[in-house]
Image (tube, rainbow, N blue to C red; front, side, top):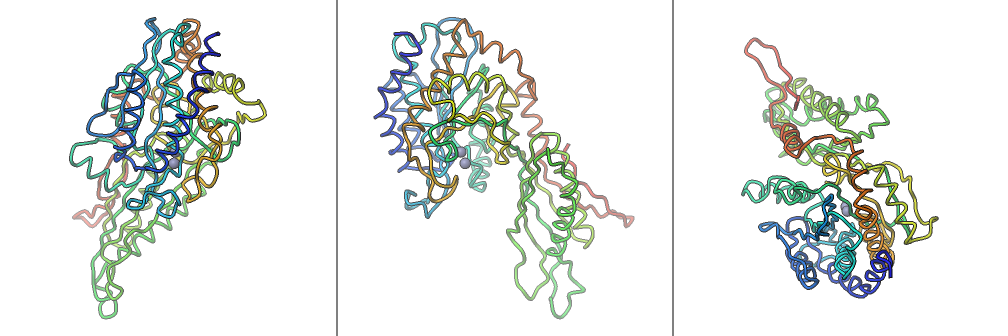
Length: 453
Ligand SMILES: [Zn+2]
Ligand SMILES: [Zn+2]
């Protein structure tokens, strides 16, 4: 049997185990940085296959390496552990509301098939370089308060699981990363888009002065109206956003006043500024901050602007896409492959990885319902698990066979955004800011201070 047939066959032999894993993890959903049971389950399965794991330790997740014994690049195959919170999902965990409404459980189940196949005797005979499996926590950017508390305790430094893995050195030496995400839009097949948006996350707090709203409003400074001025200014900016930058600004008011008979002295907003490229995100975020600061100045209020880098825009590597399409066509009929999906305006921490190395984040069918909704589930496990895993092993073979020629070419052609992870983290850290947007000077002038970089 040739190696590719061996790989495909071994995945197929693990069908039942993958199906069971999909069901088990689906019914035991856990949100980001809380995936301890899921991590224990994946750990047990990987160890049973003979892998030696390096656990992240104080957060869920692990890596496991497979070396061909021949020199060459290191490719990393990822699966995400975390769920969302969708309390009215029929399979939500009752006390936490956690539900796998984004299908990450299927990534984990499929990865078991991939890991089994690549461990089969003879599977690596034609390959060079090495393979790292990374089972990562916390892709969904949710429960920010909980993550902030982990950050304050020194447990994590970054909110995204992959970013945290990168920070901890668990991805050091990796040259290429790929993973496959389930989708309800590609029944029986696969889809690849050029990428998706990145984002800056924002917390905004307007501070005014409380006063009796009926008796003496002239003695107050209305923080709600200052916020409204800021929001109106943002909305007026929308016509200046370039279509090609896919900018999304979607603020909410999380605290709009304390008592109806008092002038609101504290109003809180949250927002993202999303966009398709780093320059645009930073530039438009600066304008948004200027608008927010000007809203404060208009009313004589204060505003604290708190920005954190969310996720980088994802650029699916065009050369990896081309190679992936060939492998997909060996697993499903060509008319089930959608090679030119539109740009997506969501965000993922795979984007961060794509600023440093070639990355591919394609979609596989097999799910139904609305992503992040209460009816999302896997209805075609043959596609979501078996075909998905078969694609992944063929892709590893494609990249690392023939002296890892394809992987080497992809790496050589990649134009990185940051030349090292240090440079990447320096940028991410520089975007983080907490500053007074409107500064009242002693000479009566007002300084608007709103730039991150
Ligand atoms: Zn999601
Ligand atoms: Zn997802």
